[in-house]
Image 1 (cartoon, helix red, strand yellow):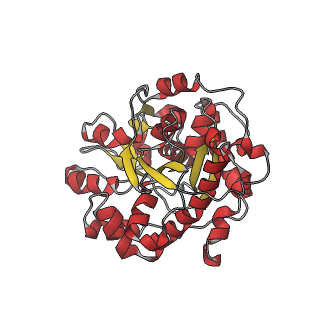
Image 2 (cartoon, rainbow, N blue to C red):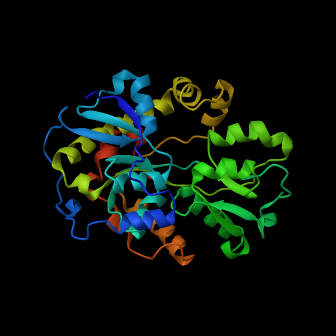
Length: 350
């Protein structure tokens, strides 16, 4: 099997996207699955091409293709294109995905609905990624104008957390607005069709949207909310397979090197990812990368766990998930793998 086989996520047998579908999937989860994260040590196996990982990390796929010296992985790869946390969770539960990259909220949502998965690598990101953006023709000019308005809200994704934090930071209760449940993949069409008044967009969608609709009154509002965690996570059933766990351990340094390469080579990254993969212009790609922050890989996950707990507490306080101790989401066997793979200037806390 080719190390760089790429395919779309197979939706056959999947239940339609949405909270009800995820709950249905969760009801099938095994309740007696062993937890390998309690064993205390990583496998000592050396992965080889007989082991295949189905990986949903599109940035790494582009990086390894653009800069062959970063790889190849010592195992076989099937690249899976995923569109956000809800699709990742479905992929995990259906056995279609072994490893994915997301923000901090999807693991919380997965735990809440009974999908068992663990975080295996962390990068701290201090950039502001999700920007409140209005529909064309909106009369929203300031954050206070959102009271009584419809806001796109994805409960299981970082965009949902960002909206709740943004409202709270500005003294607005989530009950003062109408939160319209949508996956982030539908935010653009919801804005374009004026089904919502505001949605949190990220790049490159934000640039594409404003280029088309700014002339019609679409605009962004100020925000300072960070989404600190960029992470890799995997189903616990995958981590219980020593060969796949060893392959994940071998992939983490490639993820780190790829992220760092993108930071250090902005022109190549713009061309390979934003222009060729995401379909934006070179000029827009240059503007997008100026908003990036240098990735940092913490050698100790205590602050990451504390940040994740604050997110879970925010969501549970608003009634969207049940409260719990988020430390169960972290496979601390992998705690130092990412940091040890990074040069000293990339190690540390945000």
